Length: 306
Image 1: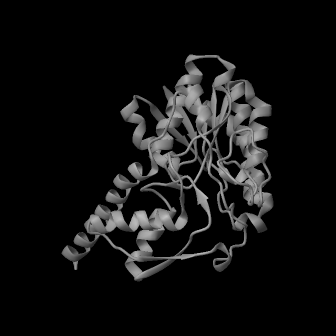
Image 2: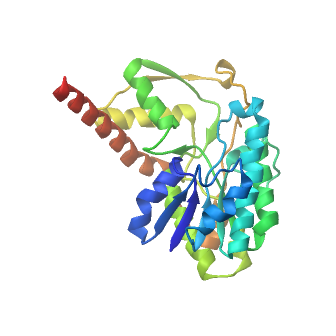
Image 3: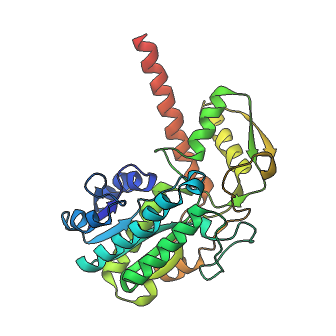
């Protein structure tokens, strides 16, 4: 399977590149300057050039706070860019897997949320991602699967797990929000799930395989609980450790309002696609191990060269 994926540096893109070979999948990242979601006219030709069997729409504007003052760009990328990808997939006659987010739900709504639960994004990021979902389904709903995921972490790019390890090297105590709950999810697990869904879409025209699905790691946590798990694993592996000071959301103000309970119910994708991701604690261990080992290697290299 030749799998074109939009973007080149995102966590899921890099995870797909790493995991693709193990599943016999040729992953073809397509990004700027050839494919630029701010230039929708560039999308079709860029994707057609790699002759994909299926397309993964992974590129997005994900700066949650910056989106509040940059609505035009967030909308251009997350809505109009997503639509351009869906139109390209339709024109090329290939299925599309589009990645979305838990931020489409209301900030004060209780979870776990099913796919049919009311949506009411609290901020621009969630609103533009929801608009992108709708644009994808309107343009190519007959052969698209929208996968909402959440709290993504990996060995790549910037994410909460990497931030916690960095902070643990700098201080003895880290303040972390304890009254927001969600489903921590490994980008490597998401990559495997995306490959499975894409294969299902290629193999079976059943409309039930299309539509909106939730895809997260099993189990939930608060940000403080996730930080504690990261520090405990790191300490076990000889890495940095810090004390977690649990704080309320009110003590950590942000420009954009975050959901208090963005947990997602993943029963539909399990029933329809036969897909269940591992527990987040299981998937967290090897990623922390990689990050700790990488830091040790860099320190050893720096010491040898000093």
